[in-house]
Length: 277
Image (cartoon, rainbow, N blue to C red; front, top):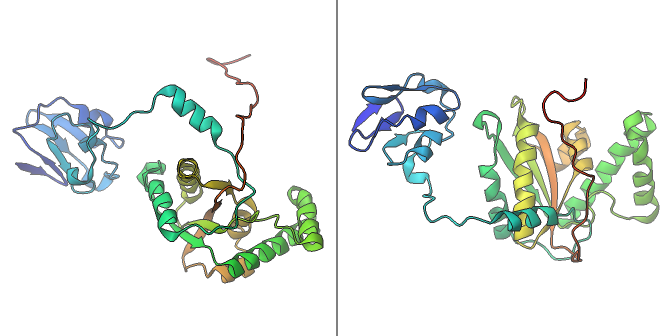
């Protein structure tokens, strides 16, 4: 077995089909008479495409080993109609049972986020899970304080927040976490430019998987806004690790109610080609 940089090729298995070079995102695998060669291994993004596409399992990559990949020959495939209905059935849940979600369940839920698409396979996300009732109550109050400051400062984008602030302070109604027993924060290194984009995709995976697990979710937009604005009382409350930033927030819990119908949306609008002149 010959070794080419971080890419290992078994010459007895390699058919020189060239698939690995075709699917390589950074285009660093070239084909020669001897087979595939990785020309610039430092540019490998560890996506594992080269190993996953090989029909004869002739390749191994130190950054994404063959031993860690799962064969797809007996992998279940969801039919299109079932997938369509499942994706349509996802709803933002804002009413939860007063039932905690076990840590093992949250870990299972978050594990799927590792496989979400990220820019250049940068990944780079970690998660902070908060389910202590007292801490959640403090997060609600701190977030309301931040929204109130933005509202009183006269920011045009914050004018609609006034009613949420008033509702909380006058009635005690949880307008921030909606009674969810668990809050998940997606964190990234401060210098990771694609942190917010990565978190969007990863938490979308979590939302879809949650529905299959009997859990409900809703995006914590106000909490994310508070965290991304680096509101100091909030950062101190969650004890944000040094060098990290908040890139997403998701509330999780067991839905209090079950929806009976699939809701419609705006009509699909598609333009082919250049569109109207």
